[in-house]
Length: 263
Image 1: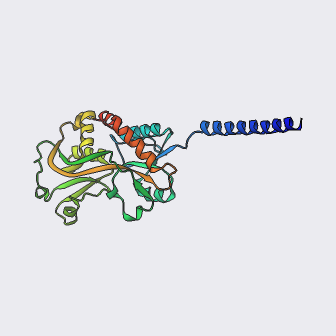
Image 2: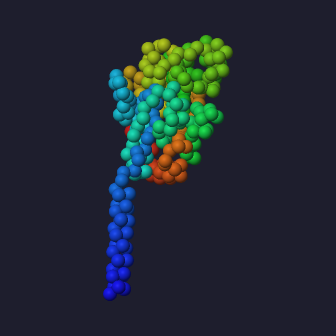
């Protein structure tokens, strides 16, 4: 009898342990994974970002960044959470660790001081080509010398390695705008001889705004820039997991499908 009671006691303890283990597993399986926090700068505009205007708290409504963020979060099994910040506050967000990833960025836009906070996914998402856009009848630019004495529209805070030396030498004048959408509007109003616009932005503008369909692009290419996703080193999501999710989406053609919506 004592042996039977001993076996019964061990069996009960084993059953309780099994029950607790199953409960712990079910709680773990049922718990939602933390959201994927994606940083977006408020200076972005369509086709990259459709940001609600005239609101005390900006919201991301659509655009390439939005659609890619949804796809990436879905692949990771997480809910997306978009954090909108002015570009001037990005450095603060790096130090505070308030997000996980920021996509459609380039390492050259960041300094050595940022390397302690961020790392880059190994494969680029896409390449952006910037061109000089002007109204019909304006001479097409094939050589930098043709920009002597001209006014060129650029985005405030952006760097243009090909053109910046000419600006600094006083050989041409800047016309500043908050984003490329505003640049196109200024260009149509004749406030600049040329404006630096990405080919993707120009295609979108021509497709959505009849007033901008007559804009022309010069043969001179201002820049070709590869865009990547960066990961905050303090993020709980491993770099390898993010890279694998991105690679899977690229292999499936998800990004190309998103880009086609805005062409």
